[in-house]
Length: 252
Image (cartoon, rainbow, N blue to C red; front, side, top):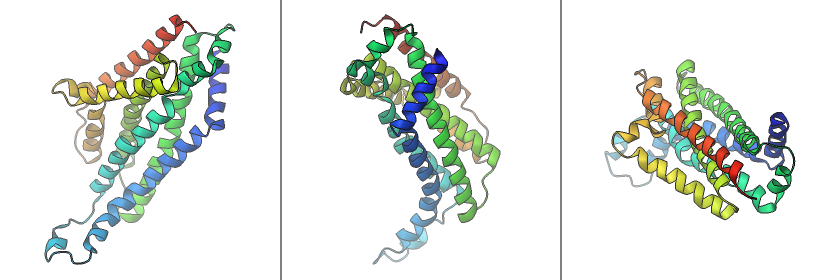
């Protein structure tokens, strides 16, 4: 039964164009990050009437600028996209009454939530693969080759980072009965985790540290974000478990 639900959700990802949006938007992020890093200093230097000597203060772009731009784009645009595409998945079906119809059959409610989570995560990962490939290609053309193994490790950490917020958005959708309330619940959960990430000591276990750890690894340093990796996986697991337990007991 779970595989049937998963196939249904994968079809929904295609039919509602969520998969296409993930693929297109993430690929665009991957391609644009090296371009922005390469040409932003040139555009700044070409500003008319730029004060004398200021152009020389603008540093030449490097591979580090590409990685910074890549992570910045995903931690802002990518994160927002993940939340928006996920926050209404369960609440939408409750609001329309399709969830109640589905649950009248011998279907485990937890399998219903897990199917949506896995289908959404699959779309996210597919988009991230294309983004990584595009970024590698354009960085090679415009700068120099990135260390492929370390860059793939960075993207694996980025997948965990985005996956945590995808799970939180899905949990918020499970708690709500309408899409508007799902949006509120999802953003509350996401903002709560972002705020906790800025708290000393607690922040070491939050997803935000994964990006800094991956960047350090890619730039030749050591990976010291193991607490954040463990904390992120535990947080996502608890959010998913909570969503499954809640919907099993919810009256529809």
